[in-house]
Length: 356
Image (tube, rainbow, N blue to C red):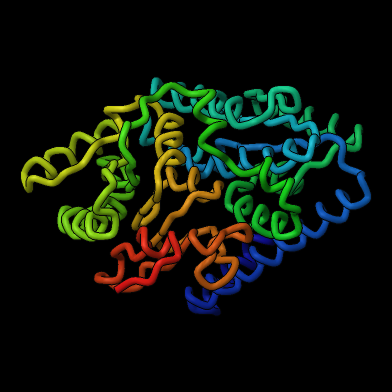
């Protein structure tokens, strides 16, 4: 019956209108959930929380996964115990881009990332099957534990696509002490991951290059040249570190050599995603166009950044602010025109000096 209604609705209304209403319903659901959680927190009713990332309805990406981890971190940063569960064994269609070894490595990385970002005294991290998840949900409900987006978890529907906006709504009501514990810092990661930090001041710039998916979000050669020129003008006394995976670093290194551009590359200083995160948090400024999961590190921190991309699941909290905790040195704008992607935030602005 529900399926038939959906088919009739799609035939009656244009696609753009359906997408518009779906977004309204999505944001309404997120605000309703944030009000529910804040109300329970205000009454001190939440003692334990179950957070779920289900591979059956979630993508094989680090960025989407880490947002759900930060939802768990929101609670642990208030000294609330969290059971973090990765549901494995069944996969969404886009996991088909990975072979068996790559799938196993990604799930292993998921566990490692969770344990790095969550307080081990307050959080447990487990990989469960679907049957084990259902048993865990029943036990949590019987114990009075909180399960954000409970119906989605039970029905194995997406949670990750709601987590970012839920967090922004929740943190809009958070005190500064809570935010200080919740947001990432360089010192926190520096004590947990292996990397080398450059001796001289530097800025970080995420450049994406993938041959598997999302090629439209790759950093083009012309974009690389134009952005590098602009960053060099804005930060003449800083090194420019290109942050990418091994494939991306090798690709952009060849462009830099071809055009005699001064760059350093993150994979010369670390060999892990979390190492990239530490390098970003240790830099003076972060820039990215067309998005990328690595932007999670600066977004969930206090460091200066400029993000230029079109969001999919995230709702801009206010004009120029992607999140409720974003400061005046954390800029966001949508990628609206092909020539409107260059960085604008430079040292003179950061230090409060007038630009000429």
